[in-house]
Image (cartoon, rainbow, N blue to C red; front, side, top):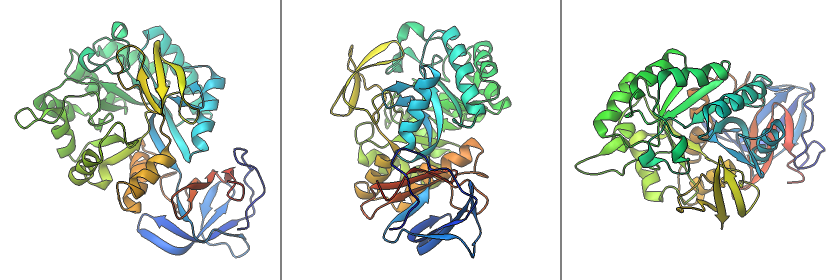
Length: 393
């Protein structure tokens, strides 16, 4: 197929001359259009252009760029590292179709988190990140996962406010064990400041989780993981989070974190409009097996599965969103349109960015992913630039 020149991993600058992608199965909010056309002018998707350069992408799927709400790093680098590390992690995930990413921190000393927030907010202001997600330190020691127990603390609203202020308007989400002292007040504080309160790394009961939702919590941090299991006498947080239409549930679809039957359960009860696929990726995503650090904790990655060296707890993932997409369609047998919603439209709406990203509609950023008939990634465009050139992928 004819494509703009350029190499994989090297963005090709957008041109004001329209490009018209033709022949693909284009997934739109209204459904899939066989043999569709998408026109890009500069950085935007635009209406039909009579003099655009045709690019034949027949036999492929054309979907919106992926959006990751929960990501700690990739390419051997962490979002808790230097500016160079952050850029490396961003680029790694762009190569796998994630055109919009929220940088997640991991539990650390408060002054360290404040410093990280300052750096990440600068990159968000430049447009490299969609914002910041603070995962910890306000979580339960009973469900700490890959967080250092000695650094955990209860969600004091004053300390929560300190992190929000450090993020300079770029804080998007804070994960809390809302049953801990100060939890509900912190949820209310976050809601007042337009920051998503997410229930996660929690030991809450069903009733306590209902209270958190009523206080303003609207996301389940990696549903099923780092929370009590669903029980028939003590349903716990999972039932409360699945049943409430105000809650979006995160799922890590790597085949390790969530069994396919649990994934189906979540989609069936929450509905496709309330699921957001995330990676919860750590440094090893897009990089390989070996020893890493997740915050202050040592992690061993073997066979693509990350676990703490001490204790063996799962420590994030090595997932990229293109693999989450492929697995959802080919193994979980979910409709392509539902997968696109979970990877693009739903997180865009949750972040308040659906006027710019999340779907292939005129006026929105030219963020798109090209997949072949086996759902292997073949092209990535971000704001009109080819990050992955289809011809060389």
